Length: 179
Image 1: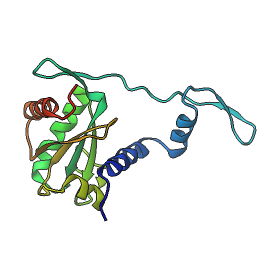
Image 2: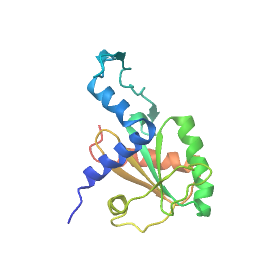
Image 3: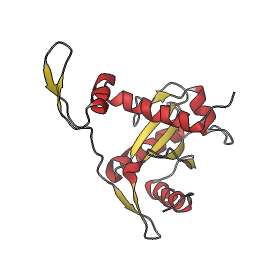
Image 4: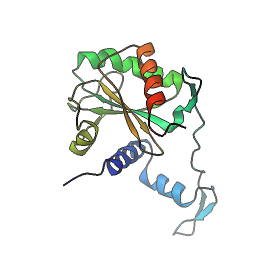
């Protein structure tokens, strides 16, 4: 049985959203995205907030092109007992907070670390999608477009902020379908 990578990435992104908000709130936002007054089944009325609009986070590549990092999410595979993760994960967390890109952390051993204490256990189908031809090593990072679900391998192993952003720059310049 072959698993469709696009469907798996969609489920990955949806599961990350489910962690951040309740399902009922999400359904209300999808059903009523303009914040109109809603009548509940008991006759009560409530106003739902409009769906959040993500502000662009512009990043200038070394070739001068600008990329909206709000359209991308870093997917991190880590382990709670991995010394390289203990070195890299705080760097990634600090960088993501400063630069403005999101991180979805998966753990391979069921444990988080100080930077990502609530990392989700990586399901087998996620592992098959992200590691079909790569050795499983931690930390491993991918860059995933939240609109198209294009997944780009970034790094395996630890690096510093400059090395990580240089790799992001290179990968975004080399990607297929560049605008």
